[in-house]
Amino acid sequence: MLVGKAGVGKSSTGNTLLGKREGGGGTFTASSSLTSVTKRSKSFECTNASTRYKIIDTPGLTNIDGNENEIVNEIALSLQYADPGPHVFIIVAEYGRVTEEDFRVYEKIRDLFGEKFLQKYGILLFTRGDDIKHDLEATLDDEINDEILVVEFKKKIVEESETLPELGKLCELCSNRIFIIDNRSQNRNYEASRFYKALGDWDLGIDYCTDSHNLAIMMAEDRKIRDAKLDADLDKELKKSKQQLEKKTKERGNKKDEELSFADKQHRDKKQAIMNSYEKAIADLKTNHTKEVEKLKHENKKEKQKPVKPSSHVLEKIGIALGISTAIVGSIVGGMAAAPVGAAVSAAAAGFAATEGIAGAAGVVAAGATAASASASSFTLGGWIRDYCNIL
Ligand SMILES: Nc1nc2c(ncn2[C@@H]2O[C@H](COP(=O)(O)OP(=O)(O)OP(=O)(O)O)[C@@H](O)[C@H]2O)c(=O)[nH]1
Ligand SMILES: [Mg+2]
Image (cartoon, helix red, strand yellow):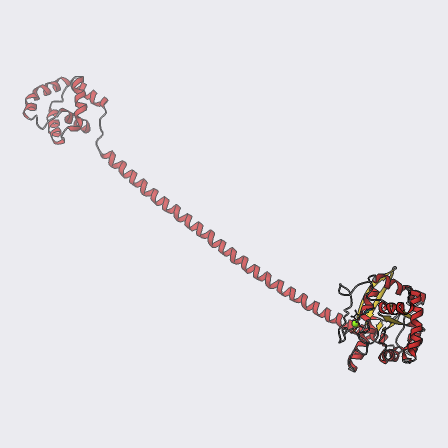
């Protein structure tokens, strides 16, 4: 858990310990802003040398401008992230700007975790390792490694503690576990590995520190009650949602049935209309057919009532029977159509009187030659034969 006053580099340190640079996903927000950047505690996890770490960044208890409620809430939130308690308290301080305020952060946490929390679980971490190195190199006129850096820096702290006794006290309270980090390093992973190695060297990260008021345990109880209520609420909502689903499914089913029965009715109506149209068409066809049949029969009957046109064969027979030469009969057959009916009937009447025998008939024809010549304008032999045949 990273704690410290505003703007000292807590979030930047958190990112370095995650092995990440600011700005990417899963990192804490860090900025040189004049106002405090981190307003709420947050946590991210990482793995280093097969060990899993959870880093908790806090707004810094001095960030929450005297609002007691905010402070209490923020502590409760940080405790939950660290449940059942932090393994390590990293008191973050900024090189060159350590003030009494840094000490006040310690006092606030001490009230929660007890007098000796730093002794067993605390580290005093200085950011701006780059500046520290730069300054020390200037005074030592030589390049320095990490070990020399810490040794020389501790000497510096002792010197500065004379003007700021809280600084020396903080070092002491942390059992002189001092770490310098360069959050501007190009190799964040190297910085992180150095830190986790130091943790091992100090035997930290094994036990965790529970708060002396057992707040974490009380909060675990609160959480249980809250979770039970959430589960009960969820059950209620699920039930409600299931009922709604059933109701809506039923409503939709009813709508579907209505639509289907409407479609069925429409289909039936359509089928009926097709049947009706078919039946009407068939009835019309039959009526027309009956009319046609009647008309044909009527015409047939009418035709039958008409005189038959004698075939040439019949005419020939008649001609022969009457003793008319074949040549004349041929001309009779040819002229039949032109014979006036009235003349034919009177001629037929005359002819009947002499139909006792074929020879007699010849005589009638011969005897009638005078009559024929007398009435040549109204009598033709063809007409006579046709009418004669009709009578027969
Ligand atoms: N040169 C240098 N600058 C640093 C280092 N660590 C942090 N800073 C800068 O210090 C400024 C503040 O850093 P943050 O990490 O936001 O500080 P903080 O403590 O989280 O700030 P709050 O959330 O406001 O309390 C940023 O501009 C950082 O880049 C470091 O090791 N070296
Ligand atoms: Mg921050």
